Length: 328
Image (tube, rainbow, N blue to C red; front, top):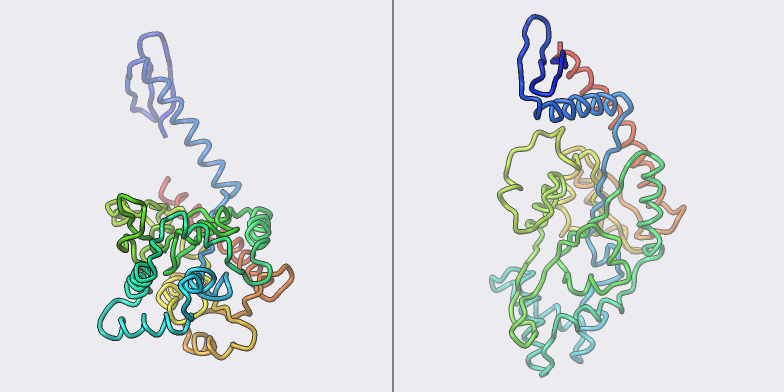
């Protein structure tokens, strides 16, 4: 490695062995800065750097007890949830994407009822969402546990529901990023067209955005740029995906296949709905949708965090050995 040999006001001499170079003095600060950074990196390799882990959640029936449209929007139109979803299913059966079908139907029903919906109306609806037991205290508790294990825990939403409604909920500030469907709004502020549609397979792109640290939804160039696995901010082994069923399978499978963990949650008495996911190797675990401290899910995620810490230490040891041979 090159080292600083001599310095004066005009130039500096750097080199190693029998090879030396003269560089301008105004580059000396840069050289010294670079040397200090190299030492800093070496120290970090020896002590073990803090890793980042991502826990990603579906929203409807995963964190909240039913589809978010059923708390305020559908009742406000004076129709039943069953009638709304049956009509949306007919649209999708005729060839429309299932997510676009429900978004289109929301706009159609609002117009028919002469109740144009603005963004602030959707946000207000988020206040009526009812969450499963323990959800409101879950994020801070799990984040704190990660800190104890030298892990920075980040929480993300990847949902086919509406971002505007999620942003109005009581847990909106617990997430680093919310990926979900959005509407476009006209000059009067009324929703007039789907702007972002997140269906079951397009959800998977957000796994790679989180993996690479490219969180801006519009930045496709950076997303598709090659980044070595050991330089990605959130390795797949440090990912957990929590969802409630078949609509989450693509994300669950990708996370699981790449070394992360996938969990299917279920309402009390509805375990059979997720058993096939476990039997057919699409998820690692199933658990009741109870986020209370000391519960099954709480215990399971803590164990996963513990295993991440051990795995990360082993990966760091492996990389240190590889670097030591390469630097000879």
